[in-house]
Length: 198
Image (cartoon, one colour):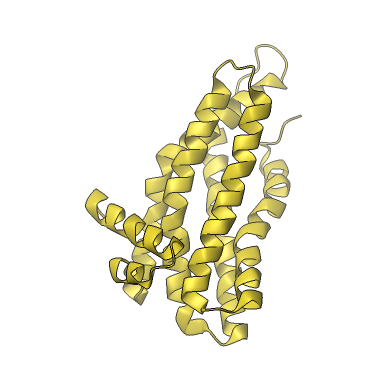
């Protein structure tokens, strides 16, 4: 598992790429080995994701009869949802890279997307923590949530531009494949797994 200094180095590389500095690639391991190691990012994301799961659990309980309980299997199902939403976009991106003739760029796509998930996991975790607390700022928090989504889309777009070059259509397609499937499938999977509000 990559150490904290390594992860900091990867995030520094991502920040350089987002700023349009190709030197960021020197701080990332975009080899096949680096691509496989980048899936450790899932474990690095777990603390932030767990806070989001706690908020979702609280949200579910609000819609249940008084005295209702949610067991530990809920967290297993949330982890399954998280894994599905993590892997499916990457699989689709791999297929797309093959169709577009840029399969050699796929490791860089996987590495950057995986490690980019880490800071956003914690940002969404902090936002979920704020949702858990009593607040009269629900509208403002919803706006922050939307802003985070926009920042994520812009970040992924800028990184994909550094990987693919000035290819607007290719970049747009990749970004859509990496972000939209998870958004579209989340509700269906929540219903299937029994973790959707009644």
